[in-house]
Amino acid sequence: MLDIAEELHRWAERGRDFAVATVVAVGGSAPRQPGAALAVAADGTVIGSVSGGCVEGAVYDLCRQALEDGEPVLERFGYSDEDAFAVGLTCGGTIDILVTPVHAASTAREVFASALSAAARGEAAALARVVAGPAELLGRALLVRPDGPSEGGFGAHPELDRTVAQEARAFLDAGRTGTLEIGERGSRCGAPLTVLVESSVPPPRMIVFGAIDFAAALVRVGTFLNYRVTVCDARPVFATAARFPEADEIVVEWPHTYLERTEVDARTVLCVLTHDAKFDVPLLRLALRLPVAYVGAMGSRRTHLDRNERLREVGVTEGELARLRSPIGLDLGARTPEETALSIAAEIVANRRGGSGAPLTGAHTPIHHDGSPAPQPAPPPPSKATHRSGSVV
Image (cartoon, rainbow, N blue to C red; front, side):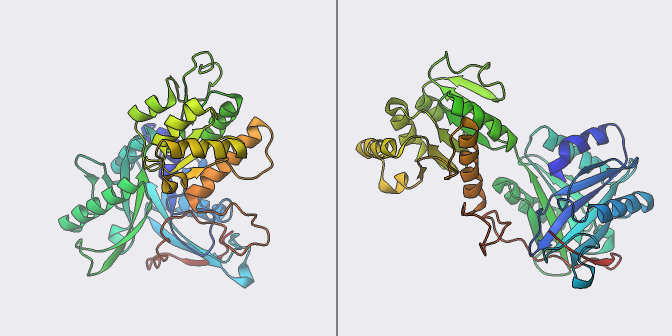
């Protein structure tokens, strides 16, 4: 649900009634992961997607029905040979979707509003919701922040709220969305509940070193991929807002000096486009020792070999050099700044999601994978939910 938080936050502020359909589990091949959401307002307006178009029509109807009767419902869509195109799930997977009505008077509205507000502002927060278990708990929500008290709760047992809050903070620390199984009283035994935890974290950082024309194209692509993009260059004549209007931040400073003082984390990507030894060597010496997601450096193969020797001379180890993506990007035959930016972005995505970068045509590898732990098996729908055969793309 938090993937469409900005628009949903506006709906909540205006007092609009709506229903949210959230992917809570997938099995096999499915185009969207847990947390992806579609919302329908009382006037029929739709935002978001739960399947890239596969089951949207059926989910729209479920949302309209939930708005009428005020009850949450969990529905499973799957593939069947005789009815493969009834709702469009043609890839042989299954997808479980929780539909939650959010009325002005509903108990969940205040918690949802706080979660949407935090996500829209880019603040760290985790929303935990019961997605399988006793009907009276279905859809109940708990909002957890890194520090401070939680909001909402499940109303079943105090220990359940405390345990889920602890687990949700662990999800939040990792920036992860997924499900956990827990007993009704907060233990690992007893009647099981399935809780979906959606993490909202600030966008990851992309720091582009070198204010060149290739950097301008990479800034645009990085922004499109929802990175918070910084451009850093020691030359004030090149590092200007006029040249990089889409950058979130422009820094005029020696690259290694800036990297020493700025905050990075395990999701940060560093793109070194300067290909000038006086900038590259001190910068990469530091960058390759930081716990960041990606370090790439532009340059020809000759530049790469020369740069590696210079880095060895200043004490960079072979293990540290093995982290360096250089020459930067995937082999797309790129020529223009825009094509080169696409090549770099493709490598960043492949590195983040665990992709090989190889063509999918003729391959027998999974299409959808992100390098994260495999999703939990789809929970069984509650007794009131209808079991529908369909298809997943």
